[in-house]
Length: 493
Image (cartoon, rainbow, N blue to C red):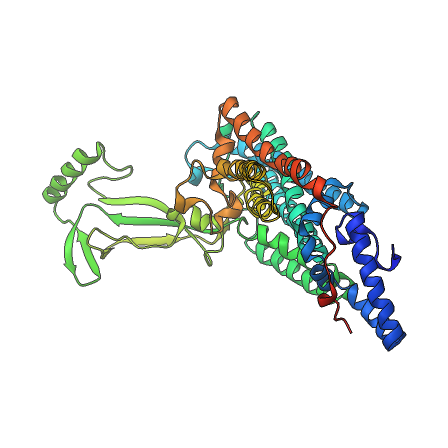
């Protein structure tokens, strides 16, 4: 075998297939050197080392790449990549542990709704640590994963398919371990949102962190070595998870609104209500209110017939998950049944200075993001397994297809079985605070050990089936295919 074309693992091929291709390429280069000289042959050899050329040369050997990649021992670079994935998974696990502590403290202190909950220093520290750890660990985990997918694609489509199936197995094992741990805690904490007031956090904290991360990304991008290694993407990946879950800047609004009221006048878009005047008229109106609500509003009196309540409003654009999480935090209008805005004459508002609430961190959000690629990897990898099945008899083809479809079904069903069709994927910032697949949060909420075991068992089964398929149907055929004439792909001069 010609050593100029590296090791079979560099191509993702079996040794036999790599030897066949290397011999053909060696003959091609020898002919170029004899006919056109050493410089042309050297240029062709450099061209053959480019990833896109190797992908074209191995495009006819996808099945061989899949089998060889799935059944060989991992290379040193793959072990190193697995080590980093495990490290960042452990950091996600630590972040989940901190989030559980934070939400446990919050639920103990939560007695009068989130408006009445002011965080103490311990709660604030845990909330900020959870926010930073979840953002950093998830961002770096997916950066390592994306780099691994890119490297696999550069080596060939078959390697990419096999690596997606391997990543699916790795993610499934991680998720199984995480679900086993989360099943030991109070499942009512899963997905819980706490927004205590945290006046000790400056409102300029998020712009400062975002600016620093963007500057760091720009500085890394200007370094050629760092740019090639895509290191400049790391700060952006962390910022992606940091920004939507950041402490929310709120304004407290103390509102004084007349009650009861009556219609004063209206136009095409508004209805204007004025305070009811006269003691007898007020009493008559409030008797109807009492019959409907069972009691009078807190703080209301005949001498001061005004409704006094507190509202809150998010400051800034709707980039934060809190804006999407609760409609009560959005600046809005009161619209009646006719579609016109209600305006109360005599209403007054007193706004506070902006202050921060706790970050939007939830128990299970880190694990939800680790699990999110599982169905996508399953769909791509298992459909590709159908594509590389090749020609075979009716019974083997039926068994191959049946096993593949069972694996595909088990990969997707746990994430969609409790969801409506239009709610399978979250496409707003709450995907970061909870998870992009709402169905996974439902898995975490199952309080039945039997249900959880069945679901995770189905995921583990689907993750192991590709090795069953290649072992039963493809591995024995790995070296039986006829050599392919690659002359059409060797126009490198």
